[in-house]
Length: 410
Image (tube, rainbow, N blue to C red):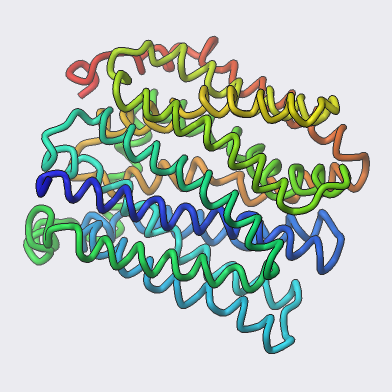
């Protein structure tokens, strides 16, 4: 069991931090919709959080490789706790408005990014300590991420309905504090060499950043993945930040249903990620990857747009979530197979940042389309664009290299 402790620690921290983030992903849009009734302002708040998040994620990589992923993850979680407390505090002081919320969520985004990258960068070392295949570790962490989505969405929506969106963010703050504490207690210090030795052997910040960029740019599989995922993330953000909350609101449902639908999807994804952890190394990656993305976006968008009965929506969301659960383990395994180990932190950070580059604009895009048409038209537009993005692996040759075994891809 001692050998598995680092994996248990990171999986537990992932459940807490991602679960808290899912709560805030419901609380903040609902808070803005409640305050203003404006889909555009709701999208603007999402932009204010995600743009700094993307920038911080890109810049954090060399620091993670130099200082150590463990330290960055722990301190970022603790600092995120302090930042999240500011929103409920503003609420209780009577100072909360959209314009006060914008700088608050920007700080939250800056602090959350390094924590997310650092936890992911720990994966190869954890696999080595646990003597487990990389697919198994990424599958366990993928299942943890999906479990967090289920718990965070379901519990978060219920909590928001009970005490309100702003006070519910205190639970998010507590989740980050517990995440940092678990990492501090559960991860050996250091996981590999001493930070001082790593720092002495590392190039300067700008040279390290350039080396990471070069390693990413030279790999056609990573470049193709980044471009495609950036497009799907843009549409996922449009859905989560604006389209789903507005659909729930215009359907005459309460905020609990935002959490229920997210939780149902994530619940199916837990099962998919668990199977990916067990047999992921034997699956045809390209086929599973393509089908997973089709189910993750276009299927559920169309279902909502066409006014399907709620029981049918719930059933299809379970199936779509199951297929989508295979995606993160596959993508993570490909990344760690193809990135040179000394560059894991900086390349993972760049991949994450570039994949999120369009996300700040997703909510704004959805808000503008909804205000000028309606939510059904916006969902159909999003579904069409998502389907075009998910078909790129079928026509772009570089995607076919993702099926190569690890030894050949090294």
